[in-house]
Amino acid sequence: MEVRQEVPADVSAIYSVNEQAFGRPDEANLVDKLRTNNKITLSLVAEENGRIVGHVLFSPMTLETETGSYPIIGLGPVAVLPEMQRLGIGSRLIEAGLDLLKERGETAVIVLGHSDYYPRFGFVRASQFGIQSSYDVPDEAFMALELQEGSLNGRAGVVYYQPEFDGV
Ligand SMILES: CC(C)(COP(=O)(O)OP(=O)(O)OC[C@H]1O[C@@H](n2cnc3c(N)ncnc32)[C@H](O)[C@@H]1OP(=O)(O)O)[C@@H](O)C(=O)NCCC(=O)NCCS
Image (cartoon, rainbow, N blue to C red):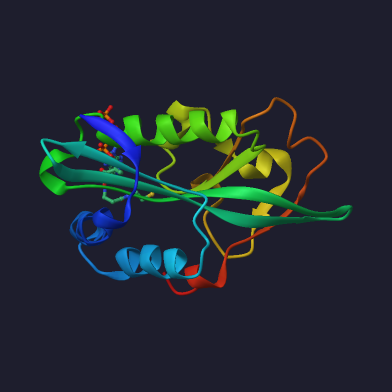
């Protein structure tokens, strides 16, 4: 299985993977909207025998603090075809994405998701850094990861998603 950046020919397969994984079109439509609006930081696909079986998206978000506003990266959606789940594909995609973002010098990543899944990649509750979501979400599901040690020190504040996320 190969993990690589998306190319234009992958667009419809990425839509399909998201729609099947979530059992609804909302996340697939979100990915398309972010792409159209040039708001994708990184989009990776997992390809096996020429077939796209998984996808992860990272997009720009804003962390508003008392001292100013800072760019931060949002992880999600992440999707693996139902029949291919629990084989490590999601983990490979997330780890590859986090490695690339770290190499690029990005400082931190935010995720809203299963509180028993993301800690394995180093995510902790964002509230530990004094960081909240602009959306009303369960504390344990809103998590943050420093890509550079100490990058979230003194960055207590509120994370704002791109408006494309509204309602998803
Ligand atoms: C979540 C998802 C991306 C994980 O990808 P994956 O390739 O199945 O995951 P991996 O094989 O790397 O990791 C497996 C682990 O994922 C966790 N996991 C997978 N699906 C889960 C779910 N629905 N709820 C909670 N944990 C889940 C399990 O803890 C599992 O750990 P285990 O192997 O120790 O039991 C995939 O299951 C998926 O597409 N789910 C539907 C869409 C979704 O919910 N996306 C995430 C939104 S936050």
